[in-house]
Image (cartoon, rainbow, N blue to C red; front, top):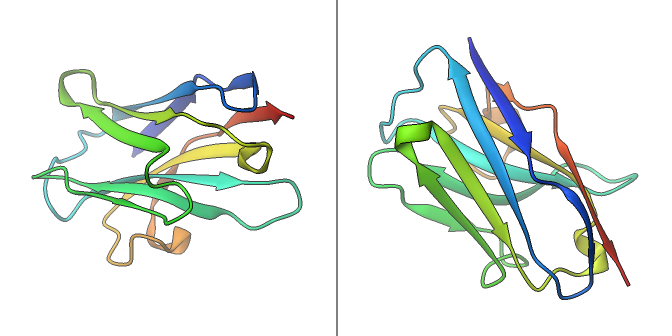
Amino acid sequence: QVHLLESGGGLVQTGGSLRLSCTASGRTFRNSASQVMAWFGQAPGKEREFVVAMRGGDDSTYYSDSHEGRFTMTRDATRNTVYLQMSKLKPEDTGVYYCAAGGAAIIRDPDEYDYWGQGTQVTVSS
């Protein structure tokens, strides 16, 4: 079992920045190309939306079109932690952000992930 714990959400003005963290614990999460860690966002009343994913091994990263250039995902393997640096935030970025992990073959599909954190709220005021 892998446990994921997110932190770093909060209230920020339009154009501001936040950094989210997701720390994995429990069963060692193999840093191999078959393992993926990702961030999804869920706005009120909407479905969970893919933001970014990082594949283990070479840390290749894949962004959604609407977030590329504003959001950056990084990993600190020594801390079993991934980060989501969010910048140039917009009100439409408001929602709960979830960290996910698993052997996802289709990285943009939330059903491909085995483990989820509890989510952290991001609110962007206009």
